[in-house]
Image (cartoon, rainbow, N blue to C red; front, side, top):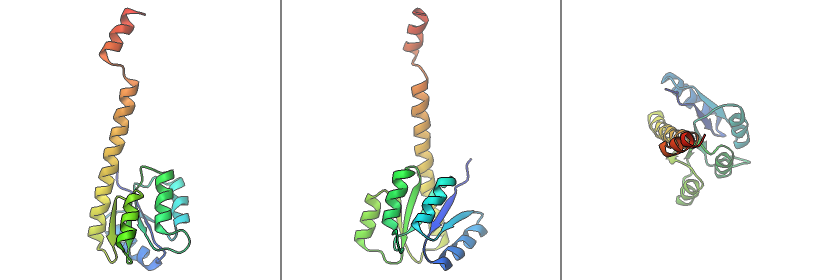
Length: 151
């Protein structure tokens, strides 16, 4: 079974370093980015399943980054993370494709639980895509019989 790959995106480097170390102690290898632009660059070259994305960042904020991630990498699941949550930003994030929303400070176990849920959602979606592709390639019994009768 494929192991979940995560990326933490936050302009607070202390948060990134601490959380990355806590995740490593639990056996998870998480990439980090300090900006939305850097996160998008990493997504270009790395297969990331779940992004934990801060809402408030200078330059490209979390909502703009989320929208660009979903546009360019639609299968990547994104969990919004903020210490400045408002109902409006939560609704905007969820409407823009975020899987979930967490408030800072959040424990690493809660973060991992949400990330695991998001990873499972992605795996179910990938399986649906594989099944649809298989059905497209495979012929129905009726088509096989018709082709056998009319070579």
